[in-house]
Image (tube, rainbow, N blue to C red; front, top):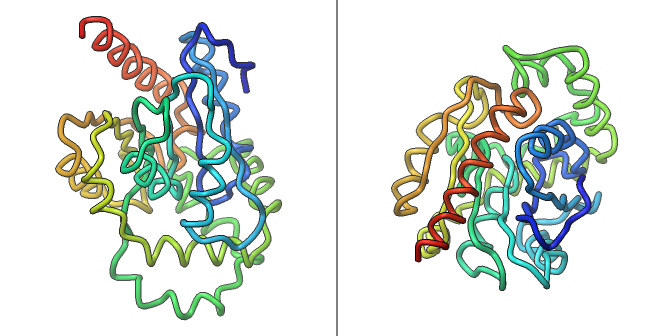
Length: 243
């Protein structure tokens, strides 16, 4: 990640299900190549915490001395929603990437009681690649994903999936007023396209950018994602100047 300087915009990155923040490096490099935006990634503890505990963890680590924008990837959407509903000092906007503010697969909610039977530590690599990376998978992306997931105990992955199946932060999200950008992957096999439509309805003036990518959009299409984020932040800055 870049070393923040107070002269540039700060983008706080909240990671996906792995929680390690190890998978942002491609996006970070693309963002630095296209803009003067700094990043600060917040990695989650490898402990089975629910969304409320993770929200407290994140709030304690947000910048205290400069404005910032939050980018919540996938699993972190409900955390971004909570921050938008009750924004900390300095937060200017929220970016959701292939994310959600309530369970994106409600039909699976009853299965949360069976998660103890899911062998998270031995899930076939092919299944994960298909769900997260296809049809943009490469050996390098596969290795990076496997390395990140290897850092997370199965019990933690199980708790995070349970949190996703039980979450519904849509009401609190709708109460927020900060600008929103939604990055939607055209080939997302986990979060349905209609999910973005629901979010756009709840956030007046929210922007939507479609990118040809799988669920792991920031990793598979970092240049396109960086361009969309940089353009959104530039628009925020222009609006603040004109105001």
